[in-house]
Length: 308
Image 1 (cartoon, rainbow, N blue to C red):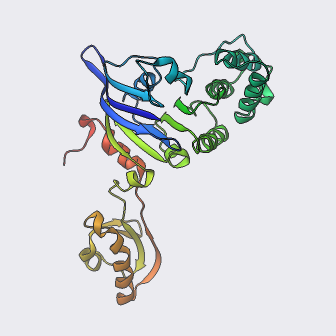
Image 2 (spheres, helix red, strand yellow):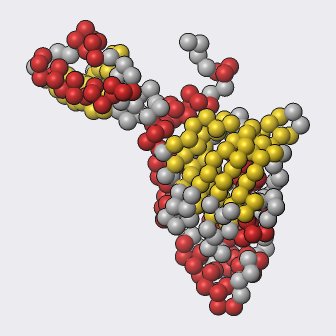
Image 3 (cartoon, rainbow, N blue to C red):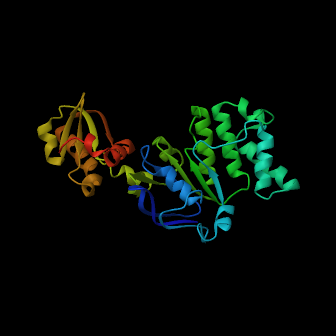
């Protein structure tokens, strides 16, 4: 549904997007992660045809965005960063206007407005003018306009920005549900949203893709992935050291596998050691890895990294 090939966007000497390639299929929800200034929004703008690339190619549903912009854009619902609206319009009037722009008329237009009002929980503010809305409701109104024509592709730039925890939960559930039948890309710098809504995630830094995989695959890149934490009376570093690198914690030990291939065997080896030494176990669990550790390691500026 979305195919990006060697996409570049340069502003003078600076390459905001530097030769990235990826694709998104129907049924996928792709989280587009990166620190501020990494190139997320610039990529979104090129995918939607809002901004032309310096070089490279974007196609949506088989339509080249540069060569067949109308055909491509008909398939896209776009929620840009800081989405604009008409503050003097009511929510209902704005959505009716958005539906008309998408070529909907009569009963089809009324049905489309009703559908997105329900999806985005806007019924209570339907007749309020947009300038009287809270930031959260204004953002949900703009999300509703992106959904008004039931697009096959959704491009959402920071879709939970400004929402309270309950609203974020609702929007993430909505994205996950829509992702069953659509191709969705949404940018975020909130790592918990990867677990909450994504089937796959890309981490971009300084205009380049530095990781691409499922949430589980990204966690597997964590130094912590595969480690086992053990709290047991009698356990000593000397006894644990043959199994891997040992770290002393407050009241426990953490054992890291020597390599990722050994991770599956580490827990079993620890169980056998505990039985053999007859240690009294107070707690033992495997670590699945932390996304924030992977994110920091891949995106931290060189000047902030500790020397090896």
